Length: 369
Image (cartoon, rainbow, N blue to C red; front, side, top):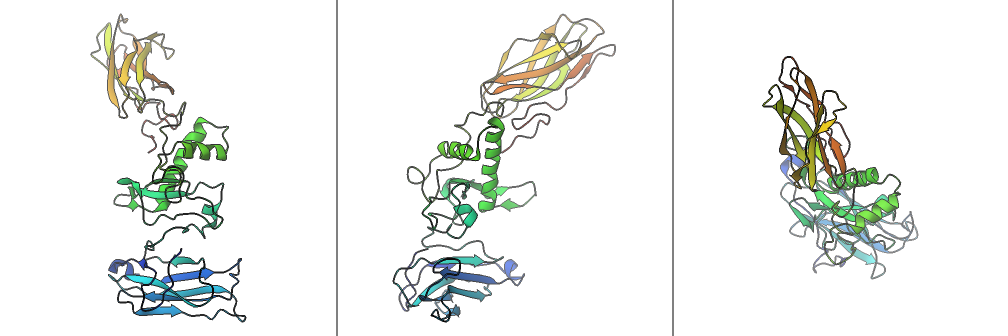
């Protein structure tokens, strides 16, 4: 982070710790702010900086003023304090002695607060070694409700080695299967990208991690300045431009037979085209080898299930017939489960759950979002 040093009475650095609620404080949590600078793992330096925590009236709440010299040549200071509900705090840095320009890292350790409100959020990926790795897919966060705007808690590049990061951004502030729980921050944006990686790997098993990363970045929805930048990376992750054979196949569910007579019936089911132009037909016959099929009909190109049906005739009296729904688009064909109708008692037994799911087969409700 880069900002002016604290030099009363001039303005301090504008890095703010947001207000907290009483519910957080009931847990009696504390906030730790660690400041480091210098060279190597020991932060070797003789430059002397001090760390201050100020309240909204610029009163010093707590400070750390270790003297950096030959007896302690390590650039580090840390403050600990207990925030009060509804109050805003600020981090200030005072240069006691040293060079006029210095790169400093601030880290916040806390169970009460979610973020530092950075005046200059650049280089906030600096100390996150795994995220800094050139081969890692580093993910920033945009809210699902404002998918073109970076979240304030999302770290930004470049890294300490000048690598542009993040690589991609993905939605956060999403609901989960836990009622009432909203998942936020980059911890909930990253699983979206992991899921997309899994789908691409399923479609292209021979692709290396580097190829998958390159494909995702090439097909991302560019945000911010044109090209890859240190706020949005290559953009918001998207599968739209990646051909996924066998992955975005239709979802189908074989239904029941209706209007059953001694020689005719209507076969029913549902098809979800998964956003790709899709056709369907029914197979039917006296065994699960079927042998007969209806004419192909159009199921559209929507992304929700639509009811489909076909009439058949010329059936043999008192005979059990098997049938299933089949749907096809450019990504492949999905076969529904087997259903039956007819026989001595007539009537129909539906096919139950369909076999169509674009991340696998078997369950009809396993579509990944």
